[in-house]
Structures are given as C-alpha cells and as structure tokens.
Length: 91
Image 1 (cartoon, rainbow, N blue to C red):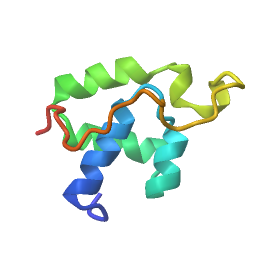
Image 2: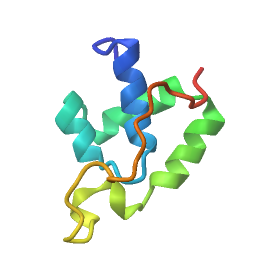
Image 3: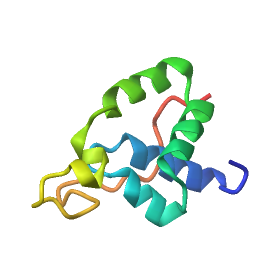
Image 4: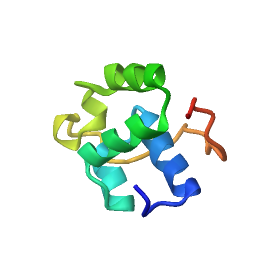
C-alpha cells in the first residue's frame, strides 16, 4: 500500500466506513479493489477496529452496487457532512 500518501489512506478508510459509499466508488476513485481495501483496513486499523468494521460491512447492501436498490445511484448521501480528518482508531 505504498502507492498512497497519508491523506489518500485516510480518505480510503473514511470511505470504507461510510455506509452509503460502495466499494466500487473507492475503486473508481483510487483504483483499489475491495480485497485491497480490506487488506489496507487490516493493516491500518487496530485489530478490534478492523473486526468491528468487517462485521459492519459484511452483507451490507449499500457497500456493493449490485446489491443496492435500483433507486440508489449516488456515491454520497446529500445529507452527509464533509469530514476533514479521520477520527478512526488507527495503529
């Protein structure tokens, strides 16, 4: 994961935690697959935070475009605030 700077890694982690941001959006923006996002999260987060994240995203329909309802076609909720820093527990 040396191809990303700290700011990009923070943004990938932020997007991975967001309920309405699908893995496809992360891949589109950063050219990183879902499995690579999982590896990055495992490397960057504390073990307990990683387990919590994996439990949260597994099977979540909003994290995969193919599982979403047909009416949901945006990457970001219109009510979502812009976050300027990452407050997720990192190693």
